[in-house]
Image 1 (cartoon, rainbow over the protein chains, first blue to last red):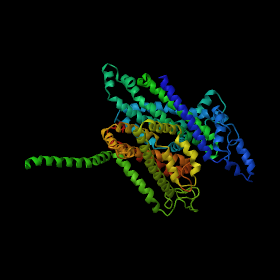
Image 2 (image 1 turned 60 degrees about the vertical axis):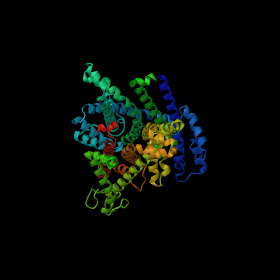
Image 3 (image 1 turned 30 degrees about the vertical axis):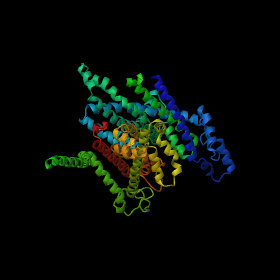
Image 4 (image 1 turned 90 degrees about the horizontal axis):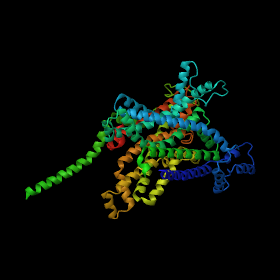
Length: 327
Length: 307
């Protein structure tokens, strides 16, 4: 099994390196940092614009391969160059990474767990009221893009706050700036800021996973081994969880790897709309400000995350499916 | 003699009738299965209404999506502006319809192109196997590592000011990968079947085998996939347009309209409620239709039981 995982890892690693390189090359040919410096009034002389661009390794008159080499060699050592305003990309990245990771981690764990639970319950109660309502709800949620869901949540929270007479849920930022008080005050404040952004991500995840989990579970429910397990005297619940769910979870590992990319995209909307200063928000801002080095760094970040998601999916696969381990 | 001929003839006639029956029968069976699902039919009706609304609706009002009414800034919905007006006096009704048009056309086109691309790449990889397969599937993996949203956002300055068809092409170019994998799997098993083997030994060139024998035999999957992709394409388009990376002004899509509307969503809800509602209804209708199609075309499929 170690060999299987190692081979997958090497494969992923090459993909990440290629994807990041591709990201850099696409970004540096498509974005135009020169316009940031030229657009000033009065127009600066070309030599000074060139000097600024050269210092940032962004001069479009330098051959792209030279620029790529100048960028890639330090990038391999963790230095992603400077932002368009001259700050270190890596430092800013470390600051922002935590924000996004917090959102993604909780989004995928909560979304996956709840999605699987809803899917299993739907399958067990097939064609009952619970099943129908779960199906209809998830169909509707899957039709609402994250940015619309986020806005609807905001409007809902505003109404709730008005009814409650106090601010129960915040929808800007990660915490109240300048808040003083004990640990619990801070924890409560964080939670109040946390609920809406997390909901905007988790709802879609639950809807997605529950659909697939339901159909995977239905395939297993009618199977012989589940009947055998019950015939041996296992209680229905134990048989369902230990034998049924375990088998039905296997295909979900693959979906997890695919869905993670979408979650990453969703987090971009969430961060931007709820004012969390994470990687997604940074990406949007840097594409608009022609910040090539930052764009490349975010591409690298998301490629690494997709790699980790893929590896986790493979690990889960190996843990759930003994056939993989023997190979 | 006549006594001998007759049974043969009648068998032949019966066989011919059976073939004819089956021919009609398959199409009719699929139709019947589809129309039995009330939700799917409802979705189809809603989609047709939306299309009609998007393309006929603009003729019902005197306002154009680009024109501005300097006497009505930020008006609530009224008899002269059915969906209200924006900050600069644009008619929200005309804009919503234009956005709906754009999003529908982009969604349908993208789904069509991306499924076509997936079919060709997947079938080629599966049929040829070996190195062709390895390289193509590796390319699929590479594209899966790069979130499509990021790449299209980065590429957005290159198609700014050019035709929106480039945007459609890019959307399609980054959404075919998962389908291609499924198609490849099907092609792998189909190519071992007798009729494909026979064609190959008769000297039919690979290109013909792929287009005449492999792809028609997975048409159900392709139709289902194209339908389900429409919803995904619309969501991707509106998402990119929301950030200004997709459809460019002065043109509008549901995404740009929602983006403009949400800035003041709380005080002036009509600015985003109509475009948001149209988006949700469109995607919901398409996904319900896709599900109905799956049940109708492929009753054995895994997911057919799950709705």
